[in-house]
Image (tube, rainbow, N blue to C red):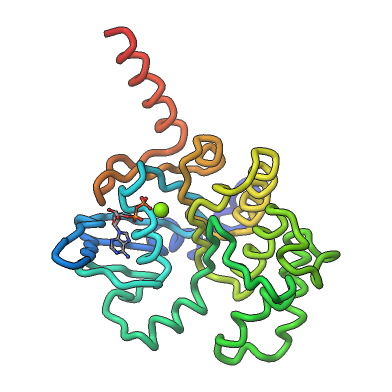
Length: 264
Ligand code: ADP
Ligand code: MG
């Protein structure tokens, strides 16, 4: 049988077919209940979500809608009360603590609003550190850390400590740390929340470049400007998915809704 070629000349092999049919992340009926004293908080209420390889997805929703809780579940930082979470086809929700830590090290890169860098360590040490915990990753760790820092444009800042770097540079260090182990997925919880608009644009350009190179990215954000760089917007309300649309439809839908409201 003849191979069918795409317009770019690359054969349409099984890898492409797999990417279309197998979700990288599949979450089914995910629930998370927090108990604080006598209070019970339903942070996630039966949430369903699929994210394919090399998607760039924005998660939006008002404060308290469950965005960070969802990110913590996706990032294997915490476990759901009930429901299933399949990452690369493996059921993470049933894993023990050790196995979960291994998955977290090997598959997940996390970027936070507050950067979460160690203040006394240099940029290089901050990036190197997670490798200490990763299995079999000792060899060549310095080279990999230096390469990651170069990748985010900080080759000339490797010996600076966080207080000697700008906000945007600190977030670049955090991104270098997050991509060091070539994670399956890069999760960013309001990564531009502490940055001015020029720096936000700069950091978004970096995320987009990583996305073009094949990285799967999920970004929690309040800002339409940030979501506009993603392909798809998932909106949460009360721990459930309110809408899940391609960016063009999400923006167009909200524009029409606001104008319909104005005309009434
Ligand atoms: P978002 O990131 O969308 O603002 P969160 O996921 O942080 O929302 O929170 C969802 C709900 O769960 C909120 O009502 C919040 O107060 C509660 N919550 C989040 N984390 C905890 C926790 N560790 N313990 C108790 N309640 C929590
Ligand atoms: Mg949050």
